[in-house]
Image 1 (cartoon, one colour):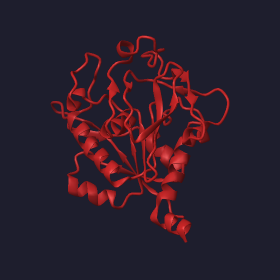
Image 2: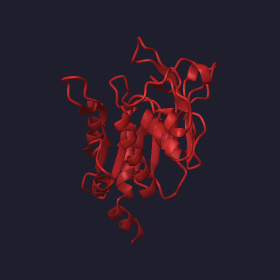
Image 3: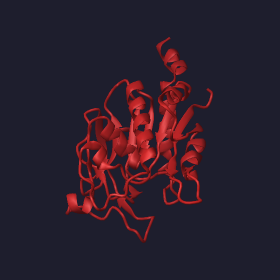
Image 4: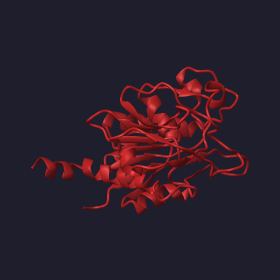
Length: 249
């Protein structure tokens, strides 16, 4: 089986004085896809809709990376003081990309704000700041410790259960926003013990999609976290037309 082509969106930093605008992506994202058996393809922010669709026609799946915050004003909410919005051009492009992913039912893995974007695109919404919105929540971010971790409670018979299995599970945590209302197309398959949503999976039989609030691509991730990318690439392979044809035959 040929390696599936996995598109990965990229971050964007605007020009500042003599410093030109530039796009970038941390290496953990594409390295994780490579190690899982996929072939990563960077999707440059700013493509117009026609060019984006031309590229998506050639991809087998997409991973939406993490980053700063979605601007709540784009969804009809006020800007919270804690929100540090994405570069507007990146957010605009990411929303266009997410719209196409959902409409085309492209297999997708969303990480961090990538998961939040999928939920918002499908009709859900977000807590803008966990300490204010969920006062009883445990700390989900430690500015002094990027390796901060908390435990995970997993729903049986889910993709994420296949990843971690039984036993105590701890994942990294570095976010201040979280999923509030879950979009109808998703099921919550893992939460932090305080109730904060940590994993969502598609409930639609025609769409393979998973989102993690934590970051399995970082250096602080465990060997088990890598299994998320393996399950994703395996799911993408099963969604390829050639694989579907073999299953039907």
